[in-house]
Amino acid sequence: MAQLSLDYYETCKAAVNGHYEGEYFNHKTDHTFSLSAPATIPRLRAVVQHMNTGFSNALRTSGHKYHINRKSVTAFELAFSNEASPEKETEDVPTISQPGLPTKLSSFEALKWVEQVLVRTRGRELSGNFNPLVVGELFWEQSTKWQQLAADHVDKVALVCTQFLEALLLAKAPKDKFLRLWASHIQDSLKERSETAARELGMLVEDIQNYPINYNHYYTDTIKKQRQDRQKQALSKAITESTTHPEYYNSQTRTHLTVADVDAEQVIKQYTQHIDPDMEKHSCEEALDCMMAIYKVSQKTFVANVTTQVIERHIVRGLEQIFSPLTVLRMKDAEVEAIASEPASAKRKREFLGDRIEKLKKGHAILRKVIGSSGL
Image (tube, rainbow, N blue to C red):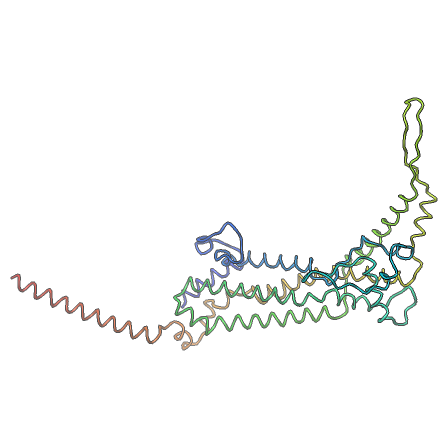
């Protein structure tokens, strides 16, 4: 038991820390890294890092309920746009999307969604402003997928750790001893770790279900950038509409030249006309900016918290302590004997075969004596 626990401890600690030295990690190395390959599971740290990266990418690409295209019709153009039909202006937020993927919304459709939330959260704020709590409601709806994605990720990592321990113990111990050790000690420890991880994840989910709190300057930087992008788009359109390309004849070179002539007064006029006078649309645009900014900040925080406070703290870290020499030392003598001792059936069979061997040896000795006596 002492030697088995020491081998388990050293190999498991090396796998958790990513130190893949020794025959156990290299005797069946596959060129293709796949979670289904038996040679991949022993390299536990690499597997966990790969799965954490996949979780981060999944939350980034499909963790939001709505995918909003801010480069479509802008709020500045909505007030003066003649392209939107009366039917579209009264259209509800669409729900058609591929399964598992965010619903795609244009800027117009996103503002209609925000307007619906803004109306039902209206307090005593002045027209043109919005209730600060509306950002929380928009964020909750946008992040509804986070809990399920995180829970699935935690379950998958816990399953990989279970498979890793099974493969490790089967490689280090006889199958009968593995079965007794797994049933009496390892299985309960893994179950307890999974339950603790689930409680920790529940607290993280509870945090994001409260109104967002932020002290990261990335939030204000993102809002400023979104506003600047819209202003650049409006200014670019104003310059394009105010630019003419008259032709001039150059008598010296006898060629026609085309030059760009920008009317500065017309640019200013076109740009100011794009400013939306509708205070409700302005507040919707501001609320949407705030929601998208806090979503980005909270998304990064949530991924970091799940991977460190749930996966690392409760699933991966300390796996080597489940069956370390110190753990064996703390076991009662009866527990150690129950794990290390051979089954009664195997013991009876061993005694029977040992008795047969002794009888055969005695018979062989007698036979040799008889043959020796005949030779004389």
